[in-house]
Image (cartoon, rainbow over all chains, first blue to last red):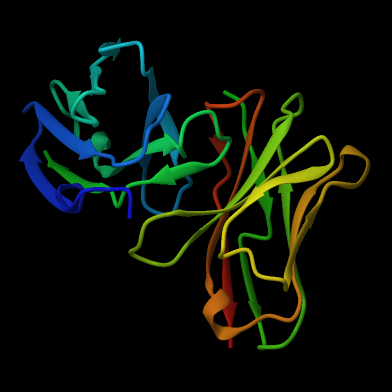
Length: 112
Length: 112
């Protein structure tokens, strides 16, 4: 597997809290993409961060990428109950490939 | 935003039968993908398709699998014959360029 064991986790927090999810990868990549998958739905892309970027923001979301340690994080500030979902990071296999390799995901539950 | 549609949402068939899963990708997209997700597990890449040809496929894309997009219509995944281990949710995705894939809601395939 190209993903570290720390990817497999479940987090339960209260609405309004901030949360950070991490993932690590083993194979070279040119992009890391973060997706959110709500129950019974397909994944929806949240942020795409390229290997020459260290940080990217979108609304309440912030993604970071550290290519030297081959790790990425996704932070959500001021969580809402509607943020409850499984969050995946994915890489383009060995860089420049069209296929996405997904991590196992973090199941985030936000209680109101 | 752009939407990928998948038909049907749920298909139940007997082992050994043929099944065709249909995907209506975003209209101007050029790259098409199928992914497989077994309940509770991570999403896994099956195949991608561009300019009428398979570009990459994984070891999960068995000889019984085929894909096509005749005349710009549905992008289809055909499994013939089906096996019990083919039971999963199959997600179609499309993208205009490499990166930034839009996913459909999935087709749940149950092979009895």
